[in-house]
Image 1 (tube, rainbow, N blue to C red):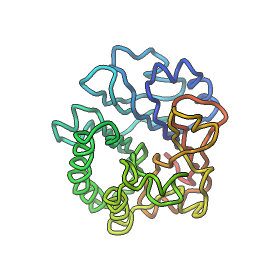
Image 2: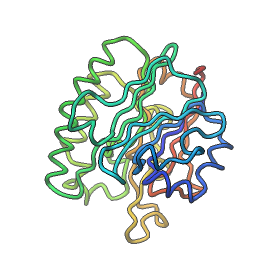
Image 3: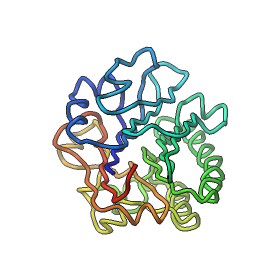
Image 4: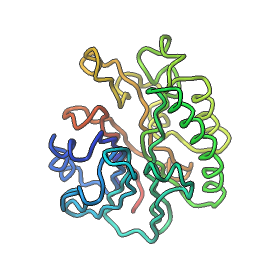
Length: 259
């Protein structure tokens, strides 16, 4: 089972940069998308259902903003749009699909970098999302949460960690929250399980300023996070950087597991 996660920074923009021919060559079973920046009416037939895949989406109410999606090669048994929390769901940040023996989730945590108000919204999201995660884990189903978590967990996860300790995405409170997700809830950072020492090759996002991508001044903020049973079946992972579809790069993981 091949699973891809990618923040698109606009599905229409990514499509114009060759996303769909690349995706067709990947033969992925699941593709988790974030930051659609589109409404259902904006999606072409290819965007809705690429060849061999069926698309599901949770769009933001605000046009040109946020939104998540999931492409799947097998029909889900259940689709859950949103967390049931009105202000979060208006921003289109959560989509959950149930399959025979696991649930796949596309998740997009807020960024707090634009203003103190957005950082407060991010902290509020984190506070309310954690009990939801606890309930998911307690349910006993295998889980795979893919997406842009907007947090670099450790010093290995961004180039300039020293100068970013007071910046959104690497704040002590954010990092401690993600540690709680891993250590208290027992969820597994799949890429880190496979490659505990990777640094620069693991980055998934680069600022558009100052030739950050060319110089690989990046951050690892896109994750596939799984319950231990599913995480143990991960065989290989990589960040695809040969083509550029957005300011993020696709995170690709192959699992010894059938969809």
